[in-house]
Length: 243
Image 1 (cartoon, rainbow, N blue to C red):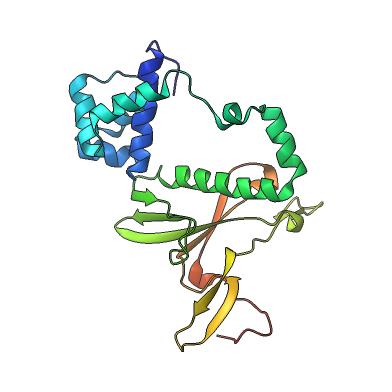
Image 2: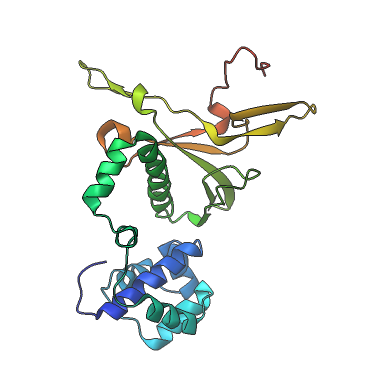
């Protein structure tokens, strides 16, 4: 949000409306279409470049499916001082950084969730994406970290990170090389079409549609590469039956 002359309460309101839009699975373009406005209308009010009047606010609440009274009640409960997890835990950014540096497993887990956030932000910026949501991590029947509707078609996107120890850069060409492991976070029993079962952490062919691998480990920039599930190689473990 850009700096503006609006009061802090109004800035909190804009943040609440922006979060409600994302929770509803709307991009700025989709919301503008529902309101009968240009995309710049949503962009400008979310960035604090224009002020909403009462009628516009009520129209937004109607399209987003939220109760105006709930919005104001929520703002009152939050107050003007937004607390962060660092405030609640009583630690400094420097201390959190040290914890992450000293605990690679914790850093890797948090990086994975940050990557999902960055992926979602990138995906919903495309006008062709009309809906986006994240399923519960503990739902073993629903794989994929991000469910989207793109040009009327539904896709499950699985987000993965590069394996840190496998990242290397060619000293002559400068080319980066890396590998990502595509598996589930926990072991579970899967049932195949012929009725046989297997206890594994591997994901089955077709459990998601698109793989998105973040390349942050290369140059500390949030970039992604994508691959169709059908194009991914299968496990070469000798005890698994070949397809």
